[in-house]
Image (cartoon, rainbow, N blue to C red):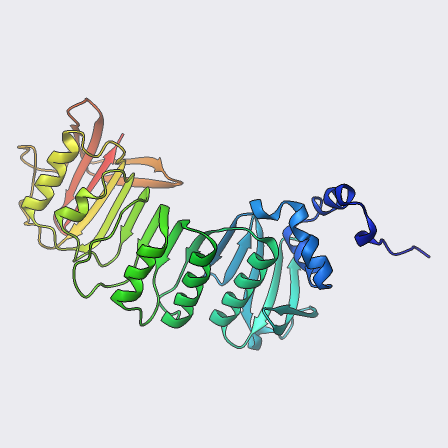
Amino acid sequence: MAQPFEILRLPTLALQNVLQFLNPIELFELSQCSQKTTSIIPLAGTKKFKCRINVSSEYIAINNYVFRVERNSCKTGSELRGDRKFIGTIVDVAHISEHEIMSFWDNIYIGLKHVLFQVTKVFGCPIDSFESSRTMSGEIYNLIIDFISTRQSEIKKLEIAADSLTDEDVMRIFGDLKFTEDLEMWYRFSRSQTIPFNTQSVLIWHSYWITPTHLSAMKNCIIIDLKQSTLTDDDMKWFLESWKSGEYPNLEYLSIKSFKLSRSFTVFGLPSLEDNVNPHFFKKFVLGEHRIVYGAIDIQRDDGVAAKIHFDIKDSIVDLLVL
């Protein structure tokens, strides 16, 4: 009969070598054995792991390994593998594959919060990305934000979206965390606010509060995408002239939708910002995604950098793609 492998009796270096062969799910399972096994998990180098939470897709990812959350009502037909403890709450789990483990909860959002808190506590790794959902309660969203901000000063990607958030809640987030790569906002401010735009990409779904002053704070952005804006012809002309003179050297893609723009909007003395004779699609891979414009015309910055610009009269959208 094979003898059990007494991992805790190994010297530290040998133990470290063994743990580094285990993937995040295996390490998590090992951590569930005892407090002593939990304490050795960081020897696997887990502080360098990358953690993402995606609320809409109902999972937490550690590197490429998925901790999925599902409703208890969906347990039927699942091959359960016992129960596991997440921040004091014991729930059933199922192994979907080598790369995915699923836990079952009465409330998906509470489950996501508990799983996030547990796995990051075990691994000691930072949270790189928090993609939320407008259906998540503001209370749980704020608890997750508080948890993140007590562990780290910045996050690469943040989506500000939850039910019943307040202006105060959102402004506190900007005070507690720095966003470095991607900011996506669904929240509707009750009035214009002054916030930093330190990210490479900015997407604001309800940007009626954005003014030229805010645009001036986006000079380091690579992508600017504003929906439901109230920017006027004069605002857009000022911005595009500023881009042309080189004030937005990193900008590669711009899309601004504003019904305040007149149907005759144009800039740079051009008769029109649309190719109606021989329109083509133009695309460029920017920050991991293809950005596409159609029916655009040629323009360039004062330093010679070429770009395509298009004004969609029907939908009142200005698109700019820097080539």
